Image (cartoon, rainbow, N blue to C red; front, side, top):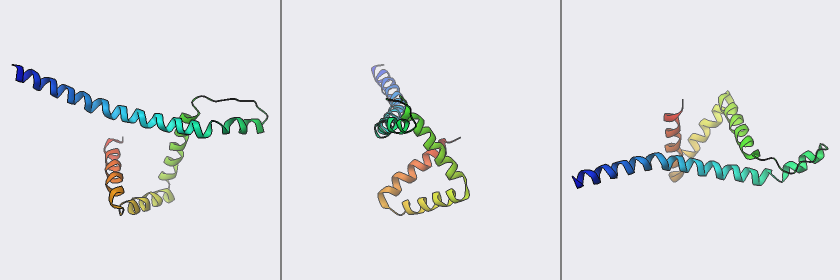
Length: 116
């Protein structure tokens, strides 16, 4: 009885961790990217708008907007013929670097498996 309860508890905890950890890693990565973009672009926005004659102190969420636009632009680029050639070249080059090859190919394969 105690052994079965311990086994049940262990499997449920592992299942919970397998769900929570990828979500947490994704959240932390997105938070890092948004903060970096806000940190880099945040001070530039008031300067840009002041050149246009507007007084703007800060635009909250600018990092998210820039990130979505960046992903969209990369997607447009990757869908055309020249972009596909660049992606294939990148795959070949990164496929020759020992440690990078393992990480890059594994993440690419995972994303291709999960992609719609």
